[in-house]
Length: 209
Image (tube, rainbow, N blue to C red):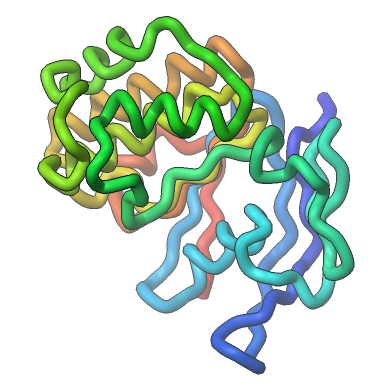
């Protein structure tokens, strides 16, 4: 079976002139890899490097059909088509509604989806569709951020502490939502988390030290 994403050992710029080195990675269709480690071990920085948000100084990342990210270049549509990203701190246009933020993301990625309300319902936020995002709780924003990431059908999804603000009920709603999407698309999901509840869904675990 061919990999979806493969990275060599990579070294990335970190806090000015400092650098940090991350292990190699291979992920395959419908695989979930859990990234663990103490605070400050570099979990978020690893994901940001793979996503092309932190410059790579050495090494490379390849996503099948989308080219190679390295110290010299980032493929033109890397963040548009190759990956989706659930950041640790949800980022939205605060004054726009939940629905308009989703539509804005769709426009930016050149996609359309007709089932947004049903997706919101699966994560229990369908009644907030017209609410300004700055009025939502952090947990509600995290769930909205997950919907925004998964509607793009990118082959690789990075999720940085996606359940940090969720209770048990909503954590499992999100897990079921992710796995259903994965079953439909075959995407690979890299999760960064301290949440031991995610251990049981991971196909493999990488621990940074």
